[in-house]
Amino acid sequence: MKHQYVQTSNHVLFCDLVHSVESRAAAEARIVLLAGDPGTGKSRCVDNFGAERNAIYIEGMPSMTLSYTRELLAHELGVTGLKGFALQKAISEAIGDERRAIILDEAQHGLNKKAEVIEYLRRVCEQYGCLLVLVCHTTERHRFGEHKLAHISTRISGLVDFKPANLEDTTLYLNTLCEVGIGEGIAKVALDQSRGRYRLLSNACNTLETIAKAKSKNSLSIDDIKGLQLCEDAMWSIRRGNK
Image 1 (cartoon, rainbow, N blue to C red):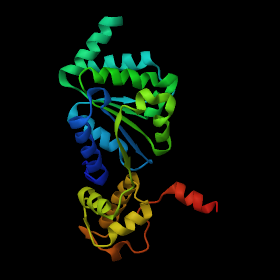
Image 2 (tube, helix red, strand yellow):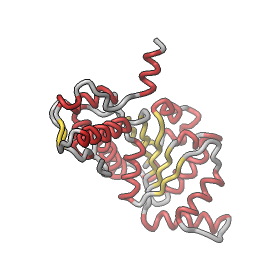
Image 3 (tube, rainbow, N blue to C red):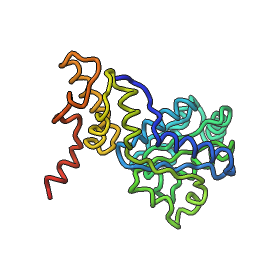
Image 4 (cartoon, rainbow, N blue to C red):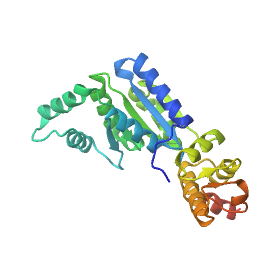
């Protein structure tokens, strides 16, 4: 299986939103909220975006604090030996020099204490008009719009919901990443079995390559996979078994 980033329909939506926010939103409101269910490609998308933009990636942690976040930023920026105002000044200048975006994954963990962590990151970004990307599970999205967090919600200028892969996405994904040729109809089978989850489509790629190797083939047809399981959504199977 090839190691390559695939620009799916979710990727296009995210990039369009980022362009819109950076082009039109006020400096104090350049926050993008990216939501989606597990397996819809959120992490891969922001990893790719972060690498291209030299963004600062922060993984949200349960009970994360403001001091932890500041120390993490300093570490990521190579700022050492400073405290207090001098430390914050160095952090802000290091971000501003390259207008570096900040990505907060599992951003719901930054909502504690009236979202002081997110408010801090917002203010750091606001100084230089940098982008702040908040990433969360779909079930956590509503929390960012709560009235008590208006100081955050009113500054979110863009929201994108990542969806499971459609047939076009699946075809693109398999054709881009599989080391073997994929015949007509195989993408539909993979889509049905994976329910559009990209991590399961990755498993399907590996299975297809294994089948091709066993059959000594460079490409596969729909007949080659007839009756075979390319991937399995284990939790879906468990839920169905409980009915």
